[in-house]
Amino acid sequence: MSAREFWKTVRRITASGGDGYVRDLEALRQPRPKVVVLCGSTRYWEQLHEANLYETAAGRIVLAPGCNLKEPHPLWADPAQADRLKQVLNDLHLRKIDLADEILVVNPGGYIGDSTRSEIDYARKLGKPIRYTHPAPEAAGR
Image (cartoon, rainbow, N blue to C red; front, top):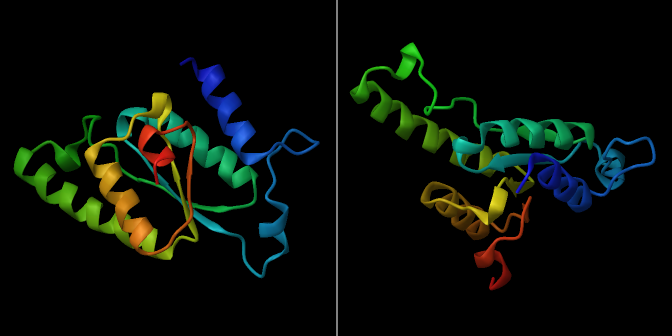
């Protein structure tokens, strides 16, 4: 799927406003905007960033992964340190789900990996609404 098709889907899902920006009008009427957490594989780092832009333009507070361990960085250059950091980041992301009103799964081509699947399961147990940027085979049956 091309990047153009991906964002066409995102715009369709979030409902485009007349000025070209996506708006969640109901959220803007609330005492505070909705908080959405982005879930998905960091292999789609650019798509996560774009979803953050669209969700922010929609008037939502966005919580997202803050580290991409697939990219080299001194903080996780040592494999043992990388393993410890991965656990810390996984736990931190669950706390972001705790804080969020809903989650948006960034899943180009319908891809959902094991970590994202466990985050979806966790959000479901909490009763959080879940949206997807692309149709997900598992989402249809639940």
